[in-house]
Length: 486
Image 1 (tube, rainbow, N blue to C red):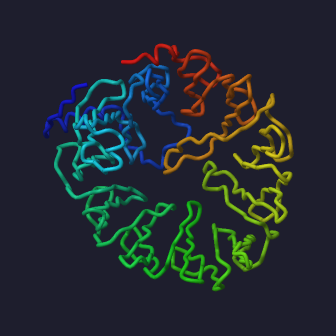
Image 2 (image 1 turned 135 degrees about the vertical axis):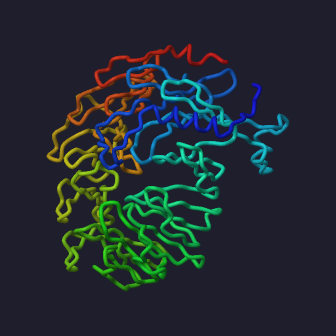
Image 3 (image 1 turned 180 degrees about the vertical axis):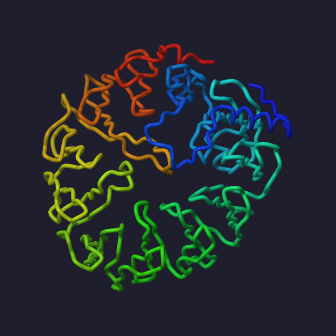
């Protein structure tokens, strides 16, 4: 396939920006987006079996089943406005090697990365070609600004270059943080790109999204607010700020503490060589202790405490919070295991709300729905059930897992209320999708990928395509058509 290098200038950039932005920008703040809003298009992929090898193919399909970009051997990305969450357009990436004599082995062993190139192409949400970008890619779009892979942050209206040294772009809480000059400087602006402050060094937006975890050259870390004010001095070995709390955990040698980022007040602290705070939210914290025996084996114990220093749970082999994986607004649930290997679930008061059997695995999906998997039988079994033991699935399954879907306004996917369940059928596994009450939405599929709560990319029988939550084909394609070599 002949590769051509794209030429572009200010006019083409303006055309790109105008076309992409006409695809549906909104002036609403990203925080107003709800998790019930639906995307216009979805990225899909399938395995194309050729005469020589497996090759991963990517495409784009709309909610109503229109194939926007066909499945082909190239990568596809949706370009979103990071401020509003709106989908603006599509970007494809094709890679090629400029020296046909270089085998894959030579490329990797000799580190010949300079011979690998990418061609990027922009499309609108209807699949119409907007621009061929060559090796320059759109990296981030935020309101009126576009960051390209060459480090230029440009105004999307007039094409003016604001900065030309930007490596990465993050937005949080009305501020924009730009990582600049080969990751050696942090520049923070307001929402209109007016520079508020700059500082040599490096940092990352915390999980809470309201401050910067700052790192000095000597490795010490502290916390700097997006307003430039120092929250915690750079004197700690590590800092962890959770999603669901305005507090953070700091560690320095044997010292660990929970500190409020509002005023720097120490809420709880401990200095013991074999004990540390391993989790904290607004209400409770987890203390982990360990002992090392003569053979070097470490025995770990975890217990839940309130901020007055009172133990409010029994001692367990481990306790872990599920809050960061569950949908926003779900009641906090903790997964734990007793010292004799019995799995349990705890609430935020340290009380056991479900006790399993030894040899089972508990996977809380919502505040009152769990997957229970039994692994100690000749054949595994899994059930979708309530905390009071009511089994919701209508047939037997060998395994289940919750599906993860993006949540607008949050950086990571969370567990949805959908469950993917599989069972043995002859010499293969078939998959079903179950809803929160155990109803089967899609069944007897060779593979299923949830694109949304009500859209699924399904391979079933000799077909693949888009299905809705009632099991209706919105788009259907023969697998034989999809695997013909180009």
